[in-house]
Length: 488
Ligand code: BG6
Image 1: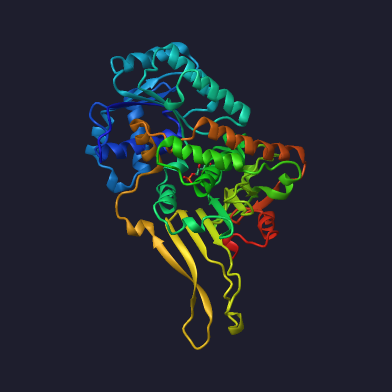
Image 2: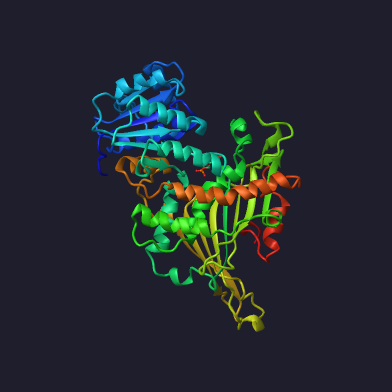
C-alpha cells in the first residue's frame, strides 16, 4: 500500500465518540498498514484538560475495545502512540488556538487535515479561529462531519462561512456511507460491467427499495437525536447518496466533479414532496418498548435526554420519484429506522414481470419478477434471483438465487469507511465527499417533508421495537401493489 505524504491530522472533538470509536482506530490501522510515515502526526484537540499520557490511555482503551484482538499488539500501539499528541483547545476561545499554532509550527509543508468532528454550531467559529491564528495553510483541508446544519438555510450559513476561509477544493463533507466497500462495489457493478446498463431504466426496472435498518437505539445520544430525527440523520445524507449512486447517469470519468455532477442531477430531479403528498408518500414512526434479539428494550420516550412528549421520528419510509427519462414512473421506496428487527442495509431492484407467461397453463408461478439484491451490511453480497424449472415431470418454476458472497470471494483486508475517507483526504481525492451544491439540493428536497410533518398534526405512528416499523410503512408500498423485501 502506498505511503501517504507527510500529514498532520488535527482531530477537533478528539475525545468525542466518533474520534474514539472510528477515527483513531482507523488511523491506527493505516499506521499498522505502513501508510502513515514516521513524520506524520495525529493531533487530537478537545476542550477537556488532559495530559498527553491521559489521552493516550483513553484511546488505547477504546482501540483495544473496537479493534479485533489480532490487530492489536503492544509494540504496534507504542509505535502509533509515539506519533499522537493532545492539545487542549476550547473552540470558542480564540487565544487557545495559539497553542495549536505553536504545535504546528514549521510544518507548513505537511498536508494539514483539520477534521471537525464537533457540533456543527461550532464549525463557523472554529474555522474563523483557525484562520485568525494562522493555522490555515495552502496545504490545509477541512473535513466536516455530518450533520451539516439542520435545514437548507443553516447548512447554507455553514457553507458560506467555511467557504470564506477554505476554497471548495479544500472542503471535504463526509458521508461515511460513501466510504463503505460495498458502496464502491455498487459503482463497480454499474460502471465496470455492461450487463446491467441496458436494463437499468424504466421499462426494465419496476421499482427499487433501499432499507437501512438498525437494531440499535439512540445509544446515549438522546439529546442530539431529539433535534435530529431519522429524516435528517439518515435520509438527507446516507439514503439519498445511495439513491444518487443507483440512479446517476454514467459519469465520463472517475474525476470527482464528473461523479458529483451526475449525482447532483439526480438530486435535482427528485420530485418535490409537498402538500398532501407529504401524508401520502411519507411515513414517520417512533419506537415503543419491545424486544430486540430477545432482549427487552425501552421505548424512545424513555431514553435519556428525550422529552416525554417527543414527536421526533426514529423511523421514516417514503416514496421518492425521479423525474428523468431514465426513471420516470419507477418508484424508489426508502426506509430507515432504529430498533428494527435486524441490522440490514440492502438495495432491492425488482425488474419488470414477463409480459406474457407461457407457463401458467402448467400451474407454475412463472410470474415472479427477477430481482437484484445488493446487501451492503452485515454480510456483503449480490444476489440475482431468476426463475428455474424444478426437477420433475411438470413445468414448475421456482425462484433461485445466483449469489455472490463478496466477503468470502475477496480475502483481502477490508478498509473501514473512515480509513478510506481519511486516506482520501490526505491524498486530496474529493470523489467520495459531498459538494456544496449536492448538499444544498438534498436539503431542498428534505425541508418540505419536515415542514409538511410540522403543519399536519397527524400523530406520529408508533411501532414496537424489534419489528419492521409501523404498519403504515407496509401500506405505503402495498398501495402501489408491491411489498418490502422482508414481507415477500
Ligand atoms: C450515522 C448516524 O451517520 O450512521 C447514526 O448518525 C447511525 O445514527 C449510523 O447509527 C449508521 O451507520 P452504519 O455505518 O453503522 O450503518
